Length: 432
Image (cartoon, rainbow, N blue to C red; front, side, top):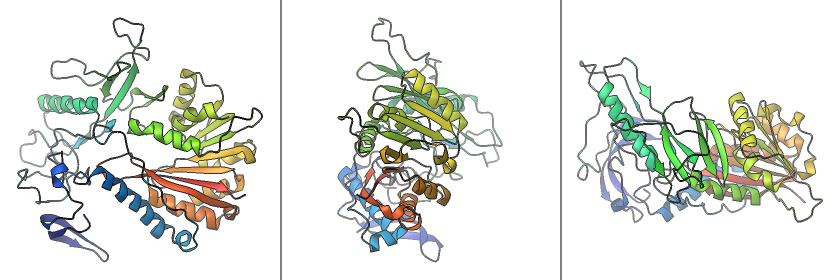
């Protein structure tokens, strides 16, 4: 933490930084509160970085992450005064127990006894020793730590992790290859009219305990039953604001369901949608739409929405989700987002665009076509604020119509509490 005075062991020296292990904290930062740490693996596991911070400080750190992303990856915007004040980071309703997907793994065993059960868990973070007085430091071969439980996972994911570890321990006979175990939450709606708890969304499937019983956890309100699916190709469901989303278990879907309603509302509020005038038409283009999260969630607020996605499988499920939820004013097309806008005939002055690209961000071809399309408003959602900052700068300063836009707002959403990750939402609008 900034302000820590520490002893470190340097093991790699680079031109601009060194890699090291944290050996001892001689004097802790005022922001450090090690008594807040809840996970015994913290500091050795590479998953979390912020458990020693009060949550309010975590949010401030993430706000600073976005500020620095735009300072260093979009320097022209900063120097030219083209950026608004970065907003406060929106908190997650859940700070623990929120992750609906985990992927523990194990490596091939390197010892002479190849049948010895390997470590099953997540990547280690060097060989730190600063908490060895609290938790005895365990030696572990390779880069995978043996982790029995992950407290940022949802309850059913944690149970699934316990089940799959026990199954591997009972059946492991040695392997020359490592493997990744998928743990994906599956949510099914319980029929409120059923006395037996029958489901409306299909049968339950997933991880079973040591007795062979399917592990099921019902939500506190009794509306949903959750299981942990381990089949990469299985179809799973998630429910967001009463809308059911089906998708393939190993495909991308946001992993913190608790914050999605806030994100969807924020995006919708920033699309300048106003249906108070019955003749007012509003159109939405959802680039990189996946299985239709934004397209379908915001369809009720627009005249028509269109989602586009390169993945044929995602488009298949987006269309299925449209039918499941009986949404009639939303269409989906398969195709590279870089060639998207030639197929769209929405009136540009009444159209907003949502971008939610992968971590690498958008390429120049796509951003140029977005500029030529010249929509009324752009909402850029990103899991990588550094590529987002780069893209926003390029769009404003290096595309034909970029000069006609201004950045209305930028703020983060805390999809992954206890970690350094932050989701950024940047809103661009055409100048009056």
